[in-house]
Image (cartoon, rainbow, N blue to C red):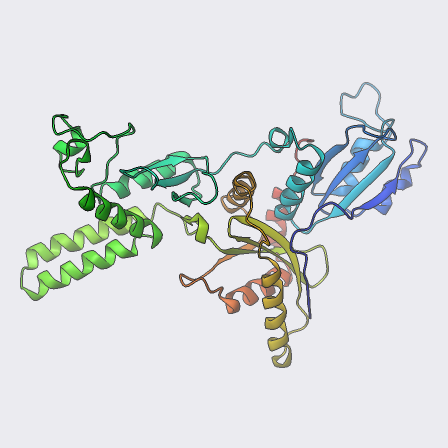
Length: 402
């Protein structure tokens, strides 16, 4: 009952198997029919390797390296490969992360094109501008900048709908041009509809606009709870004053806010505070693989072995979990590129219609719910039902070669 701490597994210790075109058909039986990331290398030094991931290593290698069928157009590398390097994984999530690291290592100039990752759409609250505004983007700013990011969202359309509906509750600007406040400026439709404080023609003081921006930030930071608390306090005051009609209108506004908030999934949070643990199956028996997105980096796997449960084992298991989670903390801040890529991997897994594994988020105070994590690990390691096995089989399709 221990945690093998592997804070950032790379492909530096793969299993290496020599290969020759003269190898018999039984050669492929030594490989597991399990998920893996692999590289096929030629005999010549400096030759470009074939790198990919698969849900069934034995079947994939047989397809690539077995004697080619007559007139077949299927890719065959039998005459070009001298070594097979591979690392077994426990899930497609682990394979995707390991493949990203391997491609980054092998093809530093072209790995992004090979990965075919779509950056996750996020809402940016641009606090570096004198008159901040919010907008949807897929580009994260430089480290240390003041701007804040919220997401990831399922799609750009979902992010824009959520942002626009949310901004209707406030009076910050929507215009995209650089403001140079001028009392003679005619304003726009939002200022005419009293939906903007109109800093463009000095319709408000800079302090008033900054206060409204602070309300918007609090709204995004708390997942709307700050605005709901504000509206509920006003509703209660109206009720106490026996102004029941106005209180009913205020209650309708609260329901509208909650309806808007339902458009954002649980993962849509402030990115620099997003702390989530993904529990995945492991290629080791009675073991769960832990991954963690923390401080902008996706780390893991850390292996947590789950033995037969008993009261005496509960405390050591909790200690092992704590040790594993402590290992999944970045030792240095990730680059903007790394955060963008690893957030895209997390987003792609999270929004799958049938995803393997579970995700547990930290509490608002930053503490991880240990009991939830232990229960999730036990569910992942426990016996699979027929339905779960069928779902995994549907997901286990070999991806195109990279």
